[in-house]
Figure (cartoon, rainbow, N blue to C red):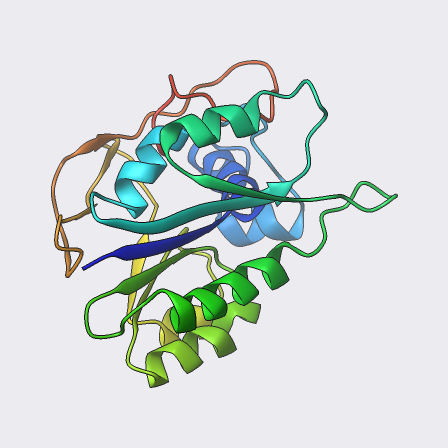
Length: 215
């Protein structure tokens, strides 16, 4: 059994900054943070632990999608070293991200036809936008198990249509993520496995491996 994983880098990072803002008192709740664009820009994520958490051992393919950084930016080299393939899109003239959702959907559907067997393989989508609902529904109708791994504020339609929704949210008091993916990728069980401490410091969009996955 192989796990095919598709990660929307910016989606995870931006929503993680909102979650961290709430956790550190900058906003009373996640909806206020979303409506008022409140972000904890010091928040970091360990891309290595994200790989361990979302991908596991039996990797069919693991791709992280994002926007093309400056030529001297080391982010994508670090991501590749962890084990992800990297798919980058050029940003618009207004410096906005474009085409990432479409690239994820295209690759996920193409791979499901060309590389996967619904009897033995599963798909993990690390993203939270409602636009993924229709392709996820189609994949499930074809017999695939499709898990969504994201923050709790993922689109309701996406959470409802997937095979399993696995929250990235850390338990605040213990600072521990209470989930892990077992080596067979058939279920997620509670286990105090991953430290979930945010690194705070000056703003830097690069995800540091010295920080842990979540809050």
